[in-house]
Length: 104
Image 1 (spheres, rainbow, N blue to C red):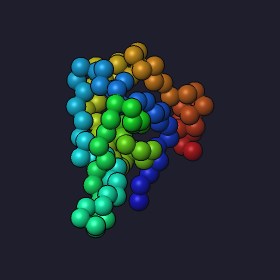
Image 2 (image 1 turned 30 degrees about the vertical axis):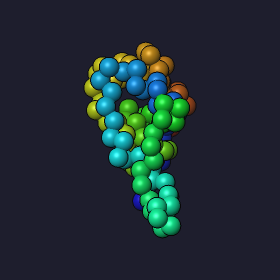
Image 3 (image 1 turned 45 degrees about the horizontal axis):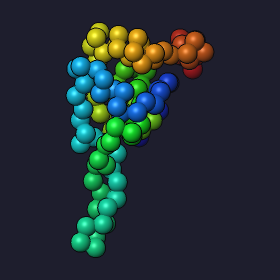
Image 4 (image 1 turned 90 degrees about the vertical axis):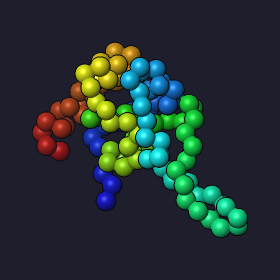
């Protein structure tokens, strides 16, 4: 069963692509239903720069709110963390840090 992480923040895909080391697993995008030859089939959606992706508290990027599904990017390096904190201004709010530390 999919799990929602403690904290995530949505950004347009174009913002993530500003990172020089950005690579993405587009095949992990959420599936969309499409009609092909009159039959309904599921296929990963085609991501555009205006689509929103979610930066999770563990610095992975997902296509949706669940931290363990539809993982688009998970090459977490010190450079990636620095980009997230300094360029994207990503930070876990104090109330969430306190909640995580207490085990809730």
